[in-house]
Length: 223
Image (cartoon, rainbow, N blue to C red):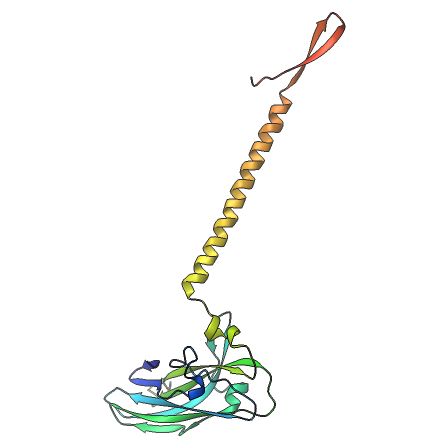
């Protein structure tokens, strides 16, 4: 099963997975090819129009970041290392209603690289003619790119090691529960210690006269 992104009748999905990435988790949803020096990786995507109107579509790569599992596309017109290596052909297509066309994404990796993981998006975009207000409406959908570069460890890749959101949520809840438990125990201990000291203060030194002279005995006022 391949991942599909669609909005306003415009859609994009992976239609072919490179053989080297066939067994990589999420390869049917994202572009996840390992990028080695002086190599070229190609992958086909299908861009579709499920609406009843013709579309003029632009397809292009855009940069993204992934910090603490939060994938965030960057502003249009910006670039990063991955997008500078990436081209889409054709980059402009016309889609009749209820139709689709395939485009080819090519990543040309240079000979000198730094092991890391790069993030990006292959966007399919449609712009409407400006309205009376002069504002241009743009619809775009994308396929994410999670591409390890060089010998970057796949086990630390975000597509390999990310946890479901409920795991991190419950981890936080457990952490706060432990904090409050320790706080409650500490408060209880402080109260008991205070009571013990107060009780000690109520011990009185009462003189007792005996045969051999003056003696002292402790009287527990709590007993």
